[in-house]
Amino acid sequence: MVSSKELGINATELVINISKELNCSQSTAWNNLRSLRNFGLIESGCKENKGQKVTLTSAGELINTEVNKNDI
Image (cartoon, rainbow, N blue to C red):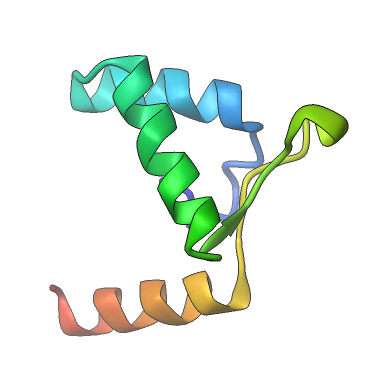
């Protein structure tokens, strides 16, 4: 969901969408987004920079490309 170029939403909106689509709690979605950010795979807003759109980092894009190429 993060890799979708036309997504262009902030973390709060993304968590709501993930929670609905995957039928999981919002806290689970937040924990997973936080892990992706901590691993350097996504960039998103923080306390000082609220509202920033969620995007893949170059490392995240590389992994996304490889996963999609190999249909893992």
